[in-house]
Length: 408
Image (cartoon, rainbow, N blue to C red; front, side, top):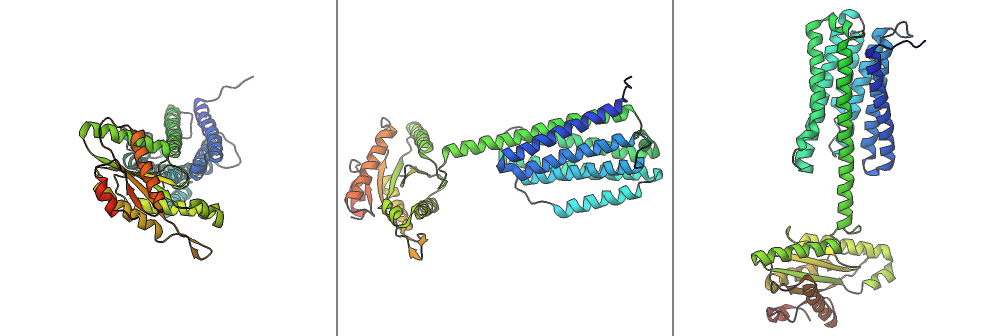
């Protein structure tokens, strides 16, 4: 004969099963998503400790059991607080914020002491109210962290919704604590019986927990998508924009200039004798040379300028608002910066130099391919002149002054 289970048991058991499933999901996530492994492990601990908390509360509803009911309830409280602390630490790891270890240790110590003092039925209300107060503060701290992350990092509309599940949890915890203070022993008795309050509280917690797990999954997936987009547009070695991203940036700039008439200039840069660097010192030295070049270029350019790795040892710079006259001294500084502080190989300086070709966008009808062709022609001219120099596109009317300034 099947004996029907009390509604409270069923509600608590559903929470335990749900959190157990998410414990496994986050463990799997820690293995699959390497970038958020530590955070996922903490979220798995949150779900696992929550499962233990509900199992302890279920055991406290049924006597006799190996441990007295008050001990089981206190143990359930400790598991619950430890779960929320693990959740908070996981969120902090995800958003790259410092871990509040001292505050967490203090919170757990308070709950541990109060749980010990509250083992007697007369002090059960004290245990419940103190435990609820700590849980409320933790939930609010997590909500604040998520709100700041959405506002300052994600910067998308309605990111404050990230904090809603935790605010709801804080309201639930606070309500339980207030009822414990006002109700005294009645609330303690109510929480250890099969009551409507327990069922409603368990269902409320389940909805909030499901919503928050969904929020965490959304954050992880969003970060993965952002990372994939970044990798699709940036060179893995130097961190600069890749060829496709530079072509897209150039097209956007050209469309803007056609509307506004704003001039812009491109610089095509090629490292001289780069194959010799690889042949003499190895590809590791060549990689260091490319990284040095990328760092030197970024250090000399404005924030509005775009720089990308256009080929193996070829780089492209887009300078919005710049003419040939204003771009030429910048190109000279870039050429000189590549020689200074070059990476050392086996104690010997790694000699680097670059040839640079400059071309200015001339008319609305000119397409990106034509502009790049002119810059590449100027670069080829620089190579023919002996390398380590800056040359302006010969078809540009402003190049007359540029030839006088360029090094032969």
